[in-house]
Image (cartoon, rainbow, N blue to C red; front, side, top):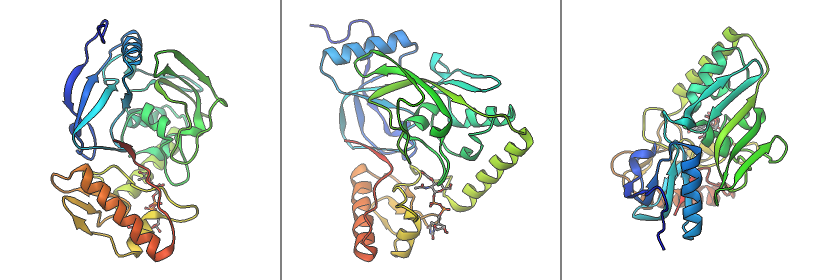
Length: 292
Ligand code: EPU
């Protein structure tokens, strides 16, 4: 029986250029559906063929294994039906492929509060909701009022607020592909929101290696503590092994300084965990998502 009924995904597509770390191998199958109908067909075909499906957003919090990744990778492309952004008096509706930066800018300019502290965070708004992106103390999940999308088998999903629970760096959604996010946001003074966004961005530029190839913070912060400070105090800041360096700017970032592989990043993650555990008996938990 034919696996793909209507749309045939591309084969052996390199994924490293689609991640901010520039690391990882190839997708066995890779598709960029332009409409919800195309997306549904791909999901149904993959499910019928027993093929695992993974959803790629902005690739900014992701470590993809070296080599060939089994299954289908779906990416909702920019400049498609999934990239729209509509503002109202009470919030916004965005397609999952809309960049978070665009949603931050548009909402701040319109005097809608809630995303201003997220200025400077890369990725798509769909990925941000999936991961509950944010700062140390604020995250997008607190203003998400509805999420729409498809189950990995291709059934429509419509989740009203209260039907899922976002937590620190975890959206709390069921296995699904998010296509639409709705945020409810109170009105505020646009100039004040702009000031807050500018301050958040300045703070990031001063304390994080924004120009380097990284995936943001590698580890979650332990309760009431900072993973970056713990790694720094363990003496690992600036440590480099095989094209991966613990950032000399912020110790919870790992920089790809050349042609780093996922195996090298995994090895360094293990070394950091062991060193911090031996020193202060704290188990650092990764924040980045692993595709193995
Ligand atoms: N610190 C050090 N050495 C370092 C890094 C940090 O001593 O190398 C100290 C700082 O001096 C400060 C404390 O650790 O006293 C906290 O550092 P920072 O203010 O940079 O915040 P963070 O807890 O390390 C969190 C988020 C970031 C977010 C910033 C700003 C996590 C894991 N990290 O970092 O999120 O940008 O706050 O809001 O929650 C991300 O999730 O990818 C991320 C970058």
